[in-house]
Length: 346
Image (cartoon, one colour):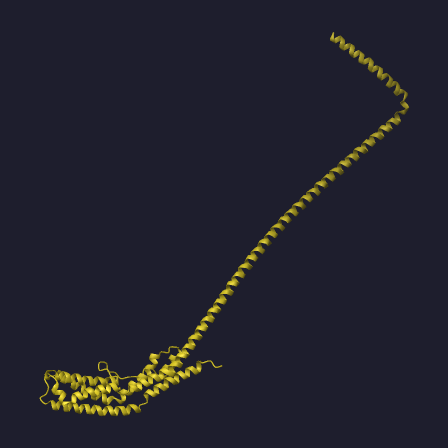
């Protein structure tokens, strides 16, 4: 049944197709004279289509070129943008470097400023310290000059006067000497003394007289030495220049001069007193006095008279001596010279 149906459908289609083809063929036959024109039209259309295809191809190529150009332009723009971005980054980095460098320079300038300020402060401190030291030195110099002037104007004369007074026996020493002499030369005094103690008392009185003269002549029996002037004029000048002025040492110049005078003018007196002292020592060491006390008193009297005469001669000679005055003049001369050289003149 289906086959029959299929056959019927194919038959129907054939007839229908035949109906359509027959008119076309008829029409084609009728219109055959126009085929030439039709072919030309077709050919023209084909040419037009080819032209359009070529145009489209050209357009496509142009579009491709344009796209390539746009892509190249975009790449160039991208490269330029990248270069600009890189340049901007480099500029930013350079600006940052410059900023940091400026900051470093600023800090360095601040450090240098602070250092300069500290240096200025240190220089000011050093200057103040130098001024203080200079002022202190000037005060010390003025004090030193004042000390020298005072010593020259007062102490030199005081030391000189003292040395002159001590060149001879003091009033007290003369009274003591007279009192002891009166005892030793008094017969009644001898008789009033205990016979057992008399030798020791006489020895003690002789020793007392000896030490009065030794003290006058500044002689030490335990340490006898030749007196030497301790400071020369050159040494004194050098001492003043070095600022080592010492009142005791300079005053000792006058004292040394006095001792030297006493040693020179009192040498004979010293020898007589030594003999007298030895005589007294022998009396003190004896167990008993000689039978004749009168002979002993006469010996004591004789020695005392020689000592008295030598004391008078010593005092005349010592008054004419000039070592003390020379020492005084030397000290004043040296101080005046130093003051003249070191006193600022207006």
